[in-house]
Image (tube, rainbow, N blue to C red; front, side, top):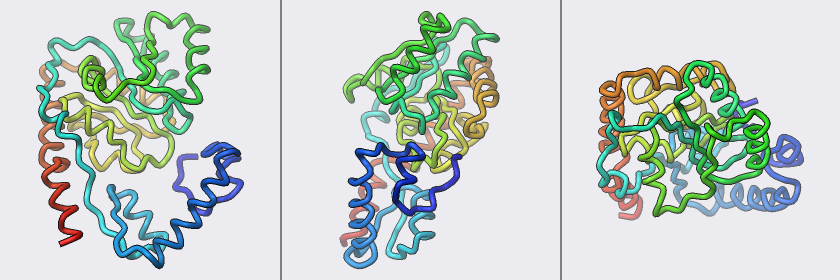
Length: 264
């Protein structure tokens, strides 16, 4: 239901679809070891997002500290995209799983096509729902509009990002952070994301993208249409603001200094 997990690990983890039955014993064992270590054997627990930091504190692990992740410098070294030259490609990067909201994204895209037929949706990634998504695409004759890129290597991901007009993170679970959004923003690509978990930490509504309620097909479709209909100059401005934000707050030099401060 997109609410924060109450943390206990058990059969509910499999019944809710968060892990498979085969994975459950591994999670039970991990939960036991993490709980023991955090409370007795670890001096400092680094939380890479405010969302995770808040959860860790709520769960009673007091020996925690927050400072943000960094985006890989290769993204900031790249030139930013020019939205006067961008094709109308909506990009998703991540696992094709129910938690990532890919079914809602596809439904939203189908709704969007009623308003704009000059747009494509590209899925970069693999996962449990890949076959189901492809079946829906075939069943609705959407092969012309929806492309499945499969796993995209680290070497090729920048090209994939720079082909897109926007990145969409439609997660329906408590996303820890959503680092793919930082990578896209570093290249000047506006983002649309669910207003959940750690996503609002870096995605500022109406600044360099839009936040939408998780699971809301209508709101997600409207946000994509709004970004598509923006003047390219305005999208360039949004992308530039997002890129500057990443450079100031999520650069590797800052992250390195924060890490070193823990051991000095």
